[in-house]
Length: 92
Image (tube, rainbow, N blue to C red):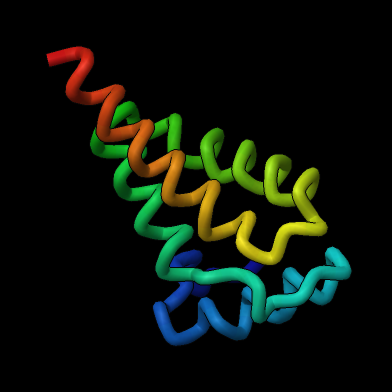
């Protein structure tokens, strides 16, 4: 059993993205780590912390279904970020 920390330093995210994308047969260049992390942050703040991984999972499904649209990731990420902001405003 490893005793090393489980936190991945920011600079290692690119390497992990490439490895994980390769494992799943995806093109890592189509994924923006910054956009994905920003979405997770915004959802965690505006909705609820546990909603962040759920939302990124749903985003992945939606992007997969729109595989023929090269702008799907960016478009859907923006829509979810906007929805999280509206969710917060609706509950104030």
